[in-house]
Image 1: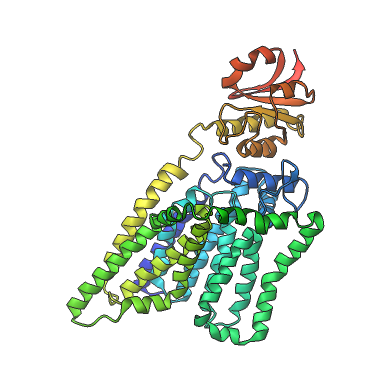
Image 2: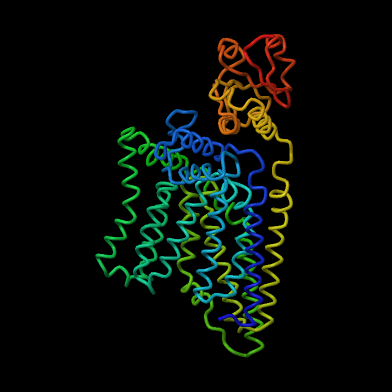
Amino acid sequence: MLTKKNVLWYSLTAIFLAINIYMLFHNLGKGYLIQTDEAYHATNAYEMFKQDNWIVNTYRYATDYFNSKPPLCLDIMVLSYKIFGISAFAVRFPSALFGLITCIAIIAFLLHDKKTYAAAFFPMFFGACSPFFTFHMYRAAEMDALYNLFFVIAMISLYKMSQCHNLMYVYGLSLGLAFMCKGPHSALIFIIGLLYIPKCKEAFKSIKRIIISALLAAFIPCSWMVKRYMFDKGNLLNALFVGEVADRVSNSDKSVPAHIARFLSSNIFIIFVVLLIAVSLVAVVYMRASKEKIPPMAKSFLSDNYLFVIWVIVPVLFFSFTDFHSWYIYTSNIALCILSSRLADYCITEPGGNKPAAKIIITAVSLLLTLFFIIPTIKNDINLIGTGGNPIDLFTNDIQEFRKKYDDEYSEINAYLIPAYRTSGEESDHWDPEYVAPAEMYADLVPVDGTVDNFLSDPDSILILDKDLWDEYSSVLTGHVILYDNSYLIFSNEMY
C-alpha cells in the first residue's frame, strides 16, 4: 500500500531507474564495435542472419571454434537484426534491454521482500558500477548481460525457495538457459545452489521436484549439444568444455592477487565498505542515545543475506584462481549491489530505528558516492562515445557511405585492407575483428587477408587503403580506379 512516507522512496527509485535507462540506451549505436569481443560476436550474428542459421556460428564464413559458447545470445542478436536492421545499435540492443530487465527484476524482488529502502538504493548502486556501462556488459554486443539475467533469476528463485518450494523449477530452468549463454560458467549457479541448501532444505524433500528441476536444467543444453554434435562431432564441445578452461587453469597461479585486488578496488566494493562504516556509526550513536543494547547486527544481517554473501564471494574466487577476464566477475558486482542495498535498508530499519537521522545519513552517503561514480561515466564515456575520430570509427563511416553510393554493386566481393591503425600484433595483411564487423555488416564485403600484391593479382576484388599510407603505395596503385575517397581510399582493380 502506497503511503506518504513511501512516496519519497518510490520517487527515488524511479529517478535512478530513469538515470539507468539513460545510461543503458543513450548513444547505444555510437562508436565502433570493439575487438573484445563484440566485433567478433556482431560478425557471428551477421553471418548467422545472412545464412538463416540459428545453430552454428561462423566467423568470416568458416565454422567458428574461437567463440565456443552456445548460440542463445547470438540468436537474440540475429533476431534484433531482423527487427532493427543491421547496425551497431541492433546488435547491442539486447544487452541494454537485458540490463534494464535485470535492474527492474531486482527492484521488484526487493519490494516483494518488503525492502522499500533497498529498492530505492539498488538502482543508485547499479548505476555506480561504471564497468557495466563502459566495457563488455550492458552496452556491448556480448553474452554477459543475458547470462547475468538468468543468474539473477536463479539466485532470486533460490532465495525465495524456502517460502515457495516450486521455485526450484525456475532455478533449474534458469541454470539451463545460463548455460546456453556462457556454457560451463553456469556451473557457478549450481555451486552456489549447493552451498545454499541448508537454507532451503525443505524444498529438496521432494524427489519428484528435484528430478523435474534437473530435467528443466538439462533439456535445452542437451538438445543443443546433440544437434551440434550431428554437425561437427565433438569439435565445438571439446573447445567449449576443454579448450579455454584448460588454458586458463594452466596459468591460474599468475594473477590471482591482481584479480582480487581489482574487485576490492571496484566502485561497488568501495560503496559497501563506506556503508559498513556508516552502519557502525549509526549503531553506536543510536545505542548511546537510546541507552539500549543493539542486538548482534553482523550475525543477524549475515544470516538473512547469506545467499548474497556467497554470491559475491564464489565467482570472485573461482574466476580469480582460474585466471579469467575481469568481466566474468561482474555477477559478483550485481550481488554486491543487492547486498549493499540491503545493508543500507538494514541500517535504517534496525540500528537506526527507522529514525529520520538514520535515513538522512545513509541516503546522503549513498547519493554522494553514487553520483561521484555516475557523473563521470555519463559525461566522459556515454555522452562522448564515437566523437573522438578513432580510425575505426572513420573506417565504419566510410564503409557505410561506400554502401550508400554503390548499393549492392560490390556485395560479396573480396576486399583487402591496408590500415595504418591496428589493435592486434598481427601482420599488416590481417583483418582485425574491428574492421571485419563493419565491412561485412554494412557493405556485405568478404574480408580477405593479403597485401597489395594479392589485391593486384585478384581481378574481382577491391582494396581499402588508409589515406595516410597513400605515399607508400602510390607507385603501384596509380592508375587504378578510386571508387571512394575520404579517410580511406577504396580502389577497384580496373584501370583508368
